[in-house]
Structure formats: C-alpha cells, structure tokens
Length: 71
Image 1 (tube, rainbow, N blue to C red):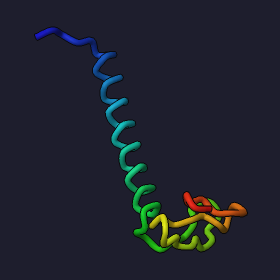
Image 2: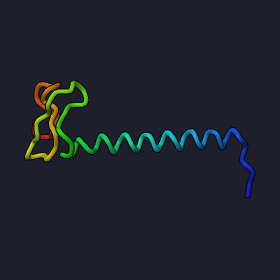
Image 3: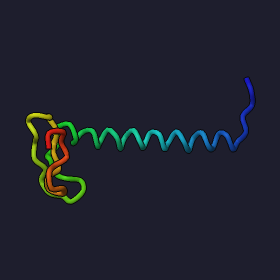
C-alpha cells in the first residue's frame, strides 16, 4: 500500500465533507420540489401552487408564469 501525504489526506477529508453537504442540500431541495412539504417558496416565502399536470410545486409567487413544465 502506498503512503499518502498528509496534504492529500486533508484534501480528501475536505472534499468528502463538501460532497456530503451537497447531497444533503440536494435531498432537501428535491423534497419540496416533487410534492412533499408545505409548498412554501424558498425564494420569497410565499405560497407555491400545486400543478396537477406536472405533479410539482410551481413557483408562481416569484415569477409571472410559474416554474412547472406546462407554464
């Protein structure tokens, strides 16, 4: 087994922590985007509406036409 430098180990640990945090953030975003949660907009705090065609929360509180596919 090869010996790795301490700098390599530190960089590896730092990147691992960053990847875990990115996955956690993506899971939280995905949670409200696909119909779970209360429909509160993360941008403005307003109430998003549920699009029954796309089965997602649509952000019509921040933008003129909404953020779903059929808007």
